[in-house]
Length: 463
Image 1 (cartoon, helix red, strand yellow):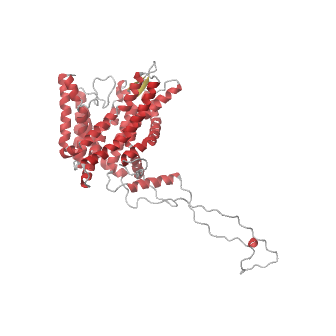
Image 2: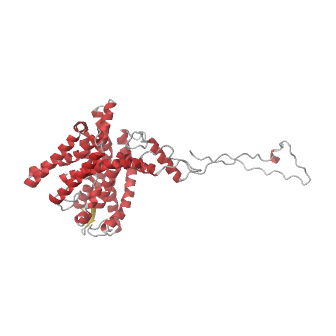
Image 3: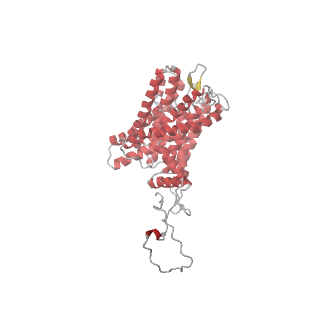
């Protein structure tokens, strides 16, 4: 509530000075002459000090917490944020754009020059967690829609519309950029590098959309669908080992992209149906996935990096390999085990724990601040995913105006200090990403509401 401020409409009139020999009058009537009337002193209106920025922040955090439905599993939202953050940081830290001597921009990766950074890919390749959460949310949403009498077609259109709007905004802007690059007679190698970095992540959304469309079947099959997906990847990988790079083998392995990510998606659907009710199931999944992945890397020739490395004969992601599937199983088990601590971290505090300090409004607790941050990121998750590479490239290309390559931004990622320097550029990428999200969030809002600018703004609760 806005603070009240009082202002006097006229300055008070100073009363006449009494004569020296005049006696004090205790019961005098008010003077009839306004010019000689004594000023009437009234009690000042109650005012509150101007709310500080910290007070407003606490109030906003409390509003977000209060707007969250009681039955919402907040741990799922945290897992989604961790997955998106892993993908964004992974691309920013292991994708390099190198300025060559001929002025062309070409892609590279520090993993190709410094294998010691390979464990970084184990932490930042979090796609299995995203598909796990996506499978559970899709299955729960489909069941909820059926309970409300909403048909499959209407439910699917609503889900896919949330992807189509933001993707359309990205493609529209990059069509304009592409036209500008062509008019400027930019080298083909540079155009290919830029477009590959921006558009290659879209395969993820295509696979996610296909699996979302298969939700009723996956929901019905449960864990069986995960077994079938993993079995298909195992068979095609085995064919590659036996027959080499035969044309039919390569064609069959392209199906691994869908079959491989079907595994965590199906596990998420099974989770929604009551799977992982016992903690030991998640422990077994984590242990079996970790041991299997280690065995495939040590004895079966699979690469240790869980992301593609330029120059490598085999990539765990293009297409998905059995090692990526087993690694995803370990991630799914770890994610389920983390849900308990995450719920305690961002859960609604007990009644009475949020109190007001003297002279202050209610103060939010650290868990409520964490939940507010999760909510803000979730509301723009698709926009963040789509535009994070554009943010990196914006900084990379615009800084070419300095006239010299900047270390960690345009230089070869083969120096031991390249990684620390790259980490120093991450805050700059993040600032540009925030600007892009603010500029293009209307596309995500419109896709969420299904209406134009006159649509009501979202309430602040995560989607």
